[in-house]
Length: 470
Image (cartoon, rainbow, N blue to C red; front, top):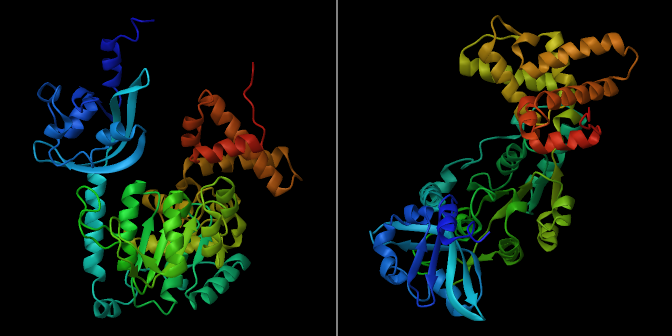
């Protein structure tokens, strides 16, 4: 066992880890780098082992080095952003977790695990700079109608009771400046609805800015939203955040339940008093921004899982709008199909007139886990491959042809069975056959069935599908 955990073997193991790992002693001297850390910092290990960390990173100090902070404070520091310039002059941004190393109650050094987010930060800063140029100046903002929001209520296709009710609620909500919480599964059209609300509001001539809260690390997201002050942290520059850029308009925060709880508290303060502080600044700035937030899960579930602060939820859901799943408004499928046919006729310069009865019947029978977005992709794919002027069963993805064959077989075997029960039995059979064919590899099975992995797991549980012991 001692041979397995020898120093040489441990160094080999650590070199295979994707994150950078760096160790210093109690005096701040570098004693170890793994391969990822050396590549991240563009450093030759032989040139740096034994040197003090501030020699290798001259832009850091006793106060800004997370490794030295961990030694000084004697406690771990988790997920802290650090921007520094290494001794070759290269600017690097990392997310660090730094942990003191103790022996017999005495701190003998510290270990740091670093994730490189340099490219992500540069992209986010370019985005902010671009947005600042786009939205700078009240007069310029007034001249650009819509100002970032593309869709209107005319783009929400459907005549079902669910869609008529949805539009009615959203149109009424558009006339106020109260916060709105939109929720619904992926692909149901949440962002499209938010665009339409902004377009129908009195803020239509002002900025509309959207930000996905799951797309960036927490430390970057705070700077993106609230802005940064020069000197607020190492490498920080004076830069307005999205709240300032959206002043007078609408800020759409998608996947709000992915925002860290601490940051949700800061968002709550904006909703309560309309003020922000840039990161690293004490000055208070007033903003007039309408917040529309969205989540792809039921807010009750987000609250139960402690992904969403209860006090923030109560502030956001002044108006709460649920996006119906496509399977809840099957009567809208023919309208949506024709809408997408017209859209791709223009794009592909085709003259497709419609869809066959059998193909439409299949489209209406399918469960649509990806909702409207999945339907759009199916029509786009069919129009890429088809010949003639009508989409037939043969033009549809393989899963629909499989569904067509099994429905025909079941029609012979199960005459008189209710449609819903017949479709569920077919779905159960397809899942079982696919899983048995791929050795019950859930990820591979989900890929073959073109389902999200979580959806497949849910359906296995729903239909009580079990592996054949024989």
